[in-house]
Image 1 (spheres, rainbow, N blue to C red):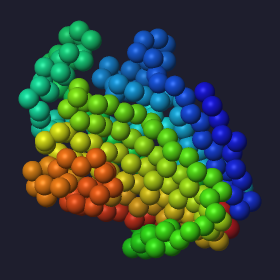
Image 2 (cartoon, rainbow, N blue to C red; image 1 turned 60 degrees about the vertical axis):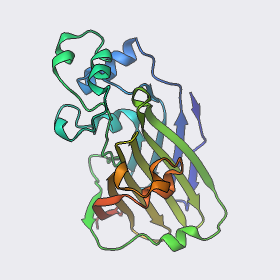
Image 3 (tube, one colour; image 1 turned 90 degrees about the vertical axis):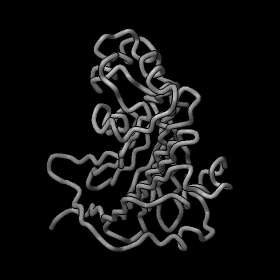
Image 4 (cartoon, rainbow, N blue to C red; image 1 turned 45 degrees about the vertical axis):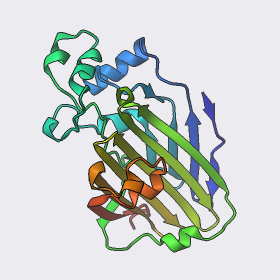
Length: 258
């Protein structure tokens, strides 16, 4: 496992990442995941030691991103009727059951759709204060050229859906003199059927008493997209064509109460 040396931003935040290998298919750690998540159905590649941690130094408030919490956010056995179907999905689901009788009769979300937004942690005497807002992210400001003080990309988990597409949760963190920006993305494509993208953005602007968090759910049937977007590998271009179903904006206040 490799660690990046945490950077201290604006004498106020500690930001650091870790990278690790793929969770083994057997062993105590795998059993820990299956027990904790109450399922034997897990993505092919889980990067269980890969993390991003952002800490407010004075208040010890944290935003943490990790694979286990992302997997906990999957509604594995509910809303089964909303899960995309492909011709081999039922056969494939059974083949992944590891011959456990209960799994044969219990369908599950084989797309591993996660609505994970990150994990907010706080000490016993302090807490994050969250307020709904209509303040939009200033995307134009984020496009300005600035020195990059820290940058990293991480994958929490990934699955190729038995060659029927892809499902993954990825992270990008960028820290500039003006602030820091995080993009947490769940992306899923079932070939010929559906594209789904859930984005969570965190933006802190130096001098503010809060972090702005934006959460967007987008989804469209592939057949509803223009032909040039139905098979493109350019994820960023196809996302702009998807239907927006959920858009939430929040302010996460971190200053100590007086």
